[in-house]
Amino acid sequence: MKVFISSDIEGTAGIVDWEQVRGPGAEYEIGRQLLTDEVNAAIDGAVEAGASHVLVNDAHRTMYNMRPGELHHEASYLSGRHKPLYMMEGLDPTFDAVFMIAYHGAIGAERAVLSHTYNPAAVWEARLNGVAVGESGLNALVALHHRVPVVLITGDDATIEEARPFMPEVEPVVVKRSITRFAAESLHPDRACELIRAGAARALARAGAAFPPTIDLPASLQVTFLTSDMAEMASWIRGVERDGARTITVTDDDPLRLYRTFVTIVTLTRSIAER
Image (tube, rainbow, N blue to C red; front, side, top):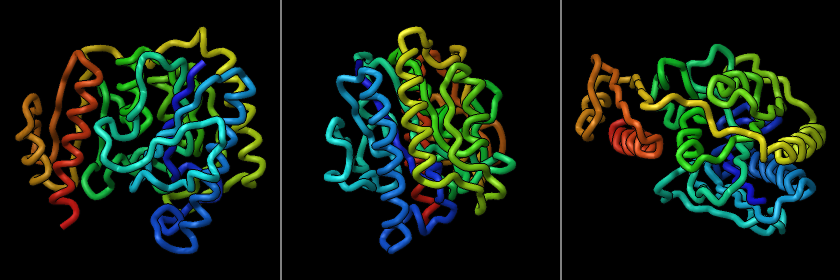
């Protein structure tokens, strides 16, 4: 069996501050080690359950957060930030299962530590078929296109709950409970890794009976930005309709094309958001 792992970082046990996820610095070095340990735990569980190949796509920020030599020797490592499919680069129909490791809640969540949706300097809210969605649901569009089930998600409690409308059968591993956007009650890292390892093994054991994400097609994605000029810039892309001062909508019967359009929108609006 082949397993695809998309790894973020904000959902890692013990991480509650931007300094832990943005290098350089001592706190970031701790954060990247905590992340590597959780990813390795997921790989351990997958291998125990019979995985013959595991691909880890480092999907956070610079996308080279883990030290290659410290990653599980049974996995290959896809790193580097110029990726056409961003957080889901490398996934194709030959894979049997997707793991989403160390994911976080959407920017609009009531309580989700370090919450954001792709770009916190641009995206205020995203809705997929009318449901508020975070990165797990958006990335699930790629899994749906390839007909590969998302069988495991790890992170805080808010992350798990927002994924359920699109992946109701997913194996959840909650490693921390969010209190506010910058506070959470975390499990000890060793305990978090134990649970992730066990959860990965359970998830892969039943992957053969799992279904791809549940997203009705054609799917409609509505994005509300922080400023009106971001919405204006997004409307330059073919197929994107402007609904209001800060809101755009794009509808497509091809989930991969819809995802690509969203990633293009995010990339384009960075030119304003970063000023």
